[in-house]
Length: 260
Image 1 (cartoon, rainbow, N blue to C red):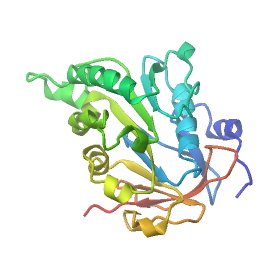
Image 2: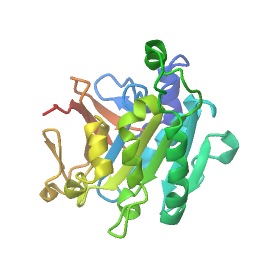
Image 3: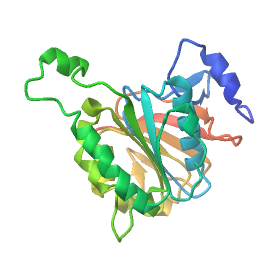
Image 4: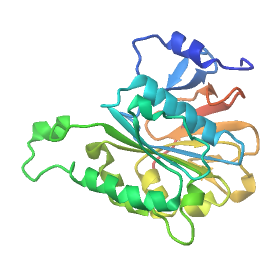
């Protein structure tokens, strides 16, 4: 493994023909690894403090801006600690909203849901329209949520209403990118929104965490070692990668999550 991964070098290695977000290098052959949001709609990142959750969201936001136009992608960034401030510049046209408080989330999320409701297929949609999702036009909506556990508290969760539209994400062009502390995540996975992500087959990135928490993704248990597990249901393949999230190297292996 290289000690550092240079983002520009990986972009150059991937070539101009691939316009999917890059998340790192595959360990054995050091080839670029992408995350395809057309196939895997959502991403859940779990890990201890300072494990690289925010850095991962930061690089994915930058990659979405690099690989899409503003007409194709709108990002709503929920960032109560302001760790992602300025990552998506308003000048790019990609920034749908920057939400730095629960009050701001509570005001904007209902507007997003109303926009998504208008994208629901009409009763008379033809099979061709349903297949091609051609009954509406507009950008894919990405809601990027850092420190989810600080937004959804015992006093209420202004993001909870997203669970209403989550099952229809593919039809509506909705993507959730959620980062949360691994502490307490085993219980939190039963919340409507997080359990909805799990049921939707979300890609899950399990970073360094306390094994005593009992958190498991598929057959993999959280570990305090500096490794991270990328898990999803649709791929029966193992890979180890260096994440591009920061100058610190993050090692990951991709494993399938078996459906029960």
